[in-house]
Length: 284
Image 1 (cartoon, rainbow, N blue to C red):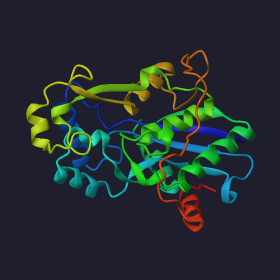
Image 2 (image 1 turned 90 degrees about the vertical axis):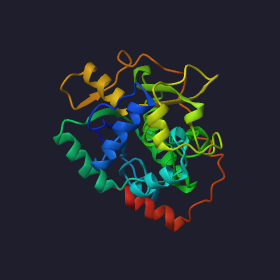
Image 3 (image 1 turned 60 degrees about the vertical axis):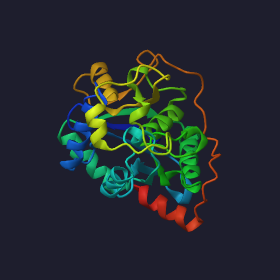
Image 4 (image 1 turned 90 degrees about the horizontal axis):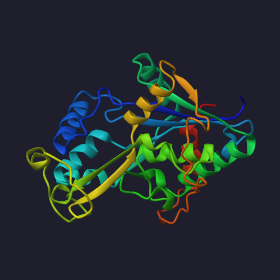
């Protein structure tokens, strides 16, 4: 297989309690305190092309992450955004290719890795590398979080980033429905720019006994979820580390996959800056 796309799925160290905001906050904080490399799980994308892409690169491995994870956690605590962290614009970065490879080896050793494989022809591989190049050139990688519209080039979390490239590789408009996690964050517990409130984490823990029922009293947070994706893949192919999703297994289409429009108007990266980013994510 000369050209391929892979989505590497790493679940959190233990299942997160999505039964309530309080439970989710508790588990997330515990996973951050123990400094797990993937406290809420992580998606990595890998693209290999038979022909050279931008700056001659043929093989990349990367994902979207928060820059300065511990510092940004302290920042949201200080700014008292509460559940607004779902929609927060964190400083972002693309993962280093060789570091990502080491983390995948670590995750595999702990049985915390599933990989979706999509064989590509040369034109599809070139399209994925072009999309990644535009993502870097437009500075989208500098904006991490769940409140961004990825198809407008506003940035994204690792989940939306991975799902977009999986969709583009496969030609499908959506990931499997079983991967999607959706909750309504209670408006009174959402701080920051979405509500112009200050909400402490203590208040989330104290009052976050349940999610809101709908948009009348909550703000929808919906995202592909690494834990759900891992469980779905395990049910599809138990004990298998890699699998190819065929049309029978992946019945959802959602129409054709969409390219990013890049309407965000973020400052553009310099050519040398983009070159350095491609060196960062390259495996060869």
